Image 1: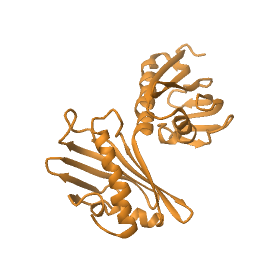
Image 2: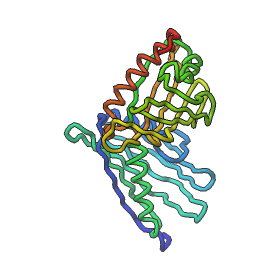
Image 3: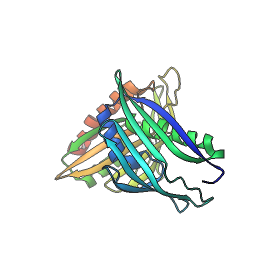
Image 4: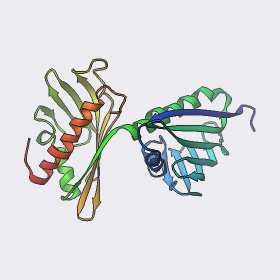
Length: 280
């Protein structure tokens, strides 16, 4: 081992409102949605091998070496390289453990392996970012799903017609990548959205770049930097629409009221527009 390599064991824990079973399913099947590197391969079964990669500079091959349903998941780094300095953290383990605690599930993530001596603080920052922000927001953010009898193409096109189902208090455009639009209810709500991802008939993502929720007592800009994600998948002759407001989490002051609002908007207003072409 190089002199500047040290053994490190860093843990971070978060409480989640979802069940251990639901969280564990996300850890098995949705890694690409919270892990900050590109994922190749499968990581949902014991002995599965998969790769994390950031461009050409950062590579690791990993293997699922322990899998205890709803309780524990362990990845082992079997090969790795960071080309900028040839750092190799092979042999490191990434450990997820789930423990029921009162009305929550405690998720603990542990990095158990190798780090460069001068990067101990950076390791802690990365682990905190992945678990406390990326994973927490992915699991806890408000979401709702609906089944629709129309095609993904029809549903996708209807979503782009924002003033016909969300609000008439609309200004701007919501059709093409980088389009921006504003929803403004004077004295109650202001938000500016930018279309940051667009995969025709499959996925649309808006990022909230500015916001003011006038009725909040504390942080009136809670929506700023959150994302609204629409994902479509075919179910036979039907379409499943899954909506997530990423960053709208239970600890937010706006959560309860906004969750009720989004449920109404998606399940009634948007569904009615998709099915019947009626505007609000």
